[in-house]
Length: 327
Image 1 (tube, rainbow, N blue to C red):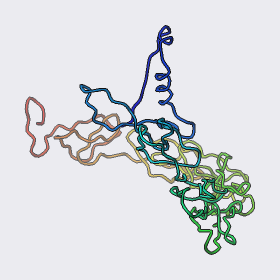
Image 2 (cartoon, rainbow, N blue to C red):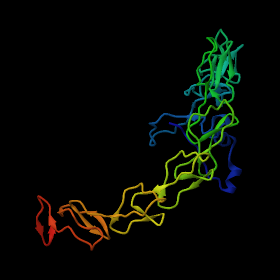
Image 3 (cartoon, helix red, strand yellow):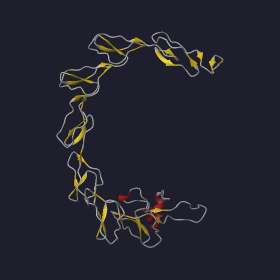
Image 4 (cartoon, rainbow, N blue to C red):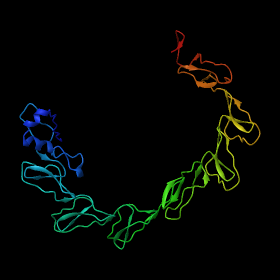
């Protein structure tokens, strides 16, 4: 269990604080390279009714130096548990992406990695020979992938040469400076598959709910829609009416209350009509909409949604009437 030491200092009290209290306070702070790490720890289980105890075990990445838990130097680590009241200890294990060279932990070169755990007190030097993300093996060297290509981390520089894979852009992304970037012009898209390692591309097809008109992509009018992908460099296209809209004077118009229509009417063609909506079994009319009967009630199919409100006034199977309610 980690111990936290906190004090509220009233101005006159600072005159009476001794050096040991200041030292205790300093132990609660951490080094920038080990954010939120406490220097001292103690296992759970101290009995508050017993004698005083102390936090005297060093936390992870601290070692004992003259009775004080001291932070490990950059690139080295130490397991938690060193007893600050015991003999001095050391941080002699290299951190991740550090390797052993002549008894020191040194940072791996850019593009190479090494797992933590190398012992700087060991007999042999170690190496960083696993390539990082977007690096490949060329003549036993981890080499940066070309722009627009990628490689997963893990290539072994001691092995055979490897290659980077082309980055292929997703739908509605285009190539800009060897990167896949989203289409920014409203109404325009791009098919998937552009090769980011190649030349720049442009978003040149119409996005969903846009249509081709005079070599431009134009947004569909309200109540209409269009599939993605019209090419504005070809013939003009048009949008079609959404569900529950009909054609009136070459416009997509909402169906009157209580009527419906399937999607797909062409506003460039003749006028169309909506059909009366008839409620299915166990639905009733409420504000020109077919609404599900409450639990315990039933109603025959066939109510005209364009008409007056109706109600579900018959009890369902295994319900009975109690004070006018199906129970």
